[in-house]
Amino acid sequence: MDNANHIRHLKVVGKLAKAYDNATADATAQEALLAAFVDQYADGTPASLAAIRLMPTYTSSWSGAIGSGSTAIQTMAVNACKAYLTDPNFTGDLTTVPAGNSAAAVLTAWAADTVADSKTLTTKGSSGIVNFLDAVAGASQTWNTASDGSATYKDSVYCVATVV
Figure 1 (cartoon, one colour):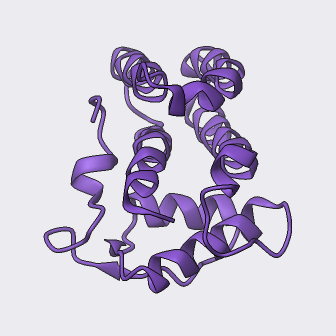
Figure 2 (spheres, helix red, strand yellow):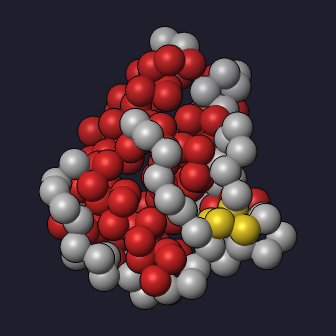
Figure 3 (cartoon, helix red, strand yellow):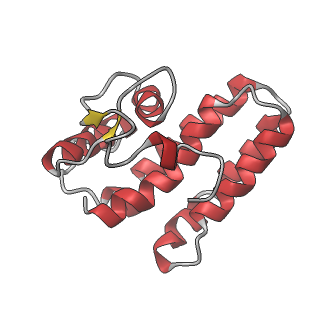
């Protein structure tokens, strides 16, 4: 996957990871994150058209989950990410061909791309993108990681509540 596509996809995945991590935040914070998410995936470029077609279902689910509690928000984030990752818009950008259509297979391929491309995500912690992607996969993946300060794609940049 080329650098521009890593960035484009991490902007969306990072917002979902932030929702997953902050599932216990108050409704005002969740609503602000949801608003930033919509602005993030619908960025006014043709590259965002696939996400614009895919994500309205999940923005509606997210809005409903805000009043339903943290488990509902985390479930929505995982389901939205699975749909995003298995969409041809995402899989078509991978260099490594996934072994199947499951989110876990796609994530294994994406992790292989980060290694092959010498790109790093922030080291896995109790929150952040790698922690979230492992939750989406249902198992730990072999990500190429580095500390947030030296990672190519930092949690401090992409796993945030503001538009990147």
